[in-house]
Image (cartoon, rainbow, N blue to C red; front, side):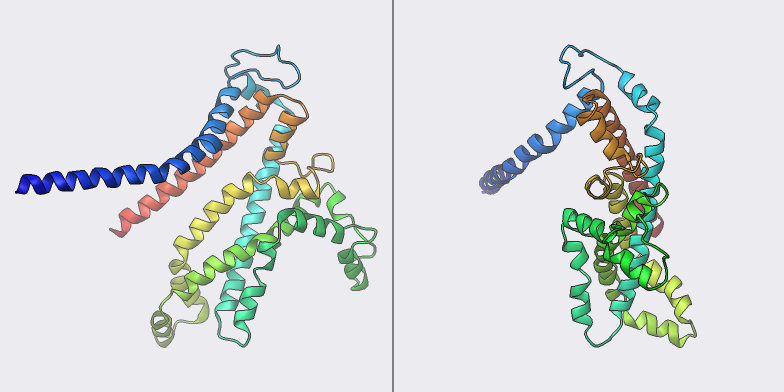
Length: 305
């Protein structure tokens, strides 16, 4: 009787496994076609000579493509621009997101409306946001320059996207404006999950607002904070569309980052091998960031146990 029951359970388990395999098959096919195959192609092209306009340029390249990328005069300036763009954007997004989350967590009239309105920058498409801000920052008819001149903050309109020292930071500020609502939503949810009794007990014990913030609030939202920072470090470092829409890497490559350099290698220089090599290096960077995040999370869990 037990043997019959075991065979029945085994048959049912096999059926469930087949159903699960059938359900996962479409997702697996999509993954292989849209992620695995392109990734494998990039890794393959990174080690070969590939040119879009000269098919005779072919063969195994080894590390030549990587050497050519590292020796390109644009690489190290673009590497610095990428790091600065990522650092300023993520830091600004987190600071503004945390401040707005704390403000929206306070009981006030119209809090629900405010929580809905603050999401508007996040839902605006990047192309629309970029073109709108480009128009607002135009020195000839940009409304932002007009306001700054009338307020006495500027003597005359300034070309924010045309300055060698201001183009990249201007785009970073616009990126902060668009992306901070994501931080706001995530951090607001984390703040609302903090037990009120904990905060009230700390206040009764004499802890002031600043001490409660650093000893209760920040430790309570640490996991959420690290997660969204990790996600946005990668997303910002490989961001292409925002900078391309607003400056196309100009002026004089002052706002050019590594993703834009990949584009130039592939579609302006037609050197797919070099573009793939730089993309492979970017993938390596993302894996390194992921490893640091994973190792830190694992260490904290081990300490907690």
